Image: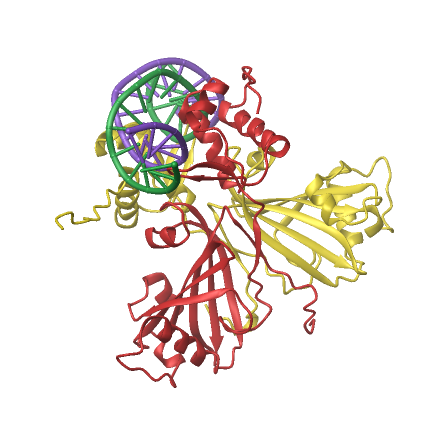
Amino acid sequence: MGTTQLESVPEPKYWHLKTVIGEALDSEFQVGEVLPNERELAARFGVARATLRQALEQLELEGRLQRRRGVGTTVAPPRVGVDVSTARHRWPGVGEDSWQAVDCATAPPPAAVLRLLEDVADRPVYAVRRLRSTQDQALAAEQLYVPAASVPGLVTSESLTGPALARGVLRELERLPLEGQDRAVELGSARADDARELDRLPGAPVLVVTTRYLSGGRTAAVSVATYRADACRLTFGDVGDLRIAS
Amino acid sequence: MGTTQLESVPEPKYWHLKTVIGEALDSEFQVGEVLPNERELAARFGVARATLRQALEQLELEGRLQRRRGVGTTVAPPRVGVDVSTARHRWPGVGEDSWQAVDCATAPPPAAVLRLLEDVADRPVYAVRRLRSTQDQALAAEQLYVPAASVPGLVTSESLTGPALARGVLRELERLPLEGQDRAVELGSARADDARELDRLPGAPVLVVTTRYLSGGRTAAVSVATYRADACRLTFGDVGDLRIAS
DNA sequence: AAGTGGTCTAGACCACCCT
DNA sequence: GGGTGGTCTAGACCACTTA
């Protein structure tokens, strides 16, 4: 990376910086390579550290950089495309997928989820926790809410807890006929617990995917999955899946 | 040993501020109401303005606030759910939709789009510009790239330009049999031109929806649509009529 | 212990919108 | 012209990782 001085331009410094550094990333850096630290970069470009950080923040938001406290700033790999296609008509956890069930509690779901689960009397509601990862990196954390009424065959016991209970709930859920799904994607910021599991700081930008699973005309389960916005590209392929087009 | 690891987690000020203000928004403010200005809020909470701004930035990212230079900070309405369902198997612009074609050029598409349009020899490539709005607010700006080969019946002339040409391209595109779509959603930051049309500043967070339209085994068109991440929730309903009456 | 990114401060000036 | 949010500075200290 050169030691180019910035000329005075009408456009904000951090914006121009972002462009300059972005181009340098393309031409002079390899994926995984460590950048000079922020104080050095700021000095090199002749700006305050806060200004430099504004540029780095944007680049991180766009998935081009990865910053980790105590470690440094590295060039991020291209975003991973993760399939969240709705066309499959499958329950979560069916078939080959990259989710791993890690826990299950019966804590009451948040108000926003309760609005989607129409019948509030369906207590308890199982809260299954799952993680989705690629080889070395956690991509998403999910909270799957399943009313007890959706898994009538579930055998519970004092000794059946944690991951085993989570898997049991998922297994029972598969027995219901899945009639459809409703899905929404929006931008959010990671809650403290999600952030920890995604190896990000609280408030990190995430793509929140909310799914409503329908069975028997009812909402049989609600999933709230938070994907690392810097590391993921959500794909909804319907190609090669040519269902009966109406 | 006496070294008890007390997990005192000093929560950052801006994070706490965000919570406090967020709760105040729920209980004490109406949608559209104007908040006190940043200098006053900072003084009221006893923090530096920069710290307060960190909290406001997060709230804006989550779609709870709207800030406009020279105007002030207002309480944002709930996010608008916009349907970007892929199940429709429709070309862009067919039927009742909220897009408005505004222009058409023949500028060469960016490299990332060229990679999706396999046959690079298909010149020229029409670049149709469209806007999607609700009553009073622009939600998304789209650049739709259509190789000339996809619209063989298009009659061009010197006098056919701008919006009229854009509509002509869309009309011709509808004549092709649509075989499928490939869609991806990721987080991006608004380019200067998109930002202007979305009434945001450059770099504002946007949800970038990239769609590949397939016809005859080829990529017949590529759409890159940028949605205001603060104002939109993208929905992918495949439920259709099953939707609970609302 | 040294080095990194994350938080925070107290100022300053600028660009924009309103009246 | 007066008020707003946006940009920028030059520091300071903190939390975390690594050696």
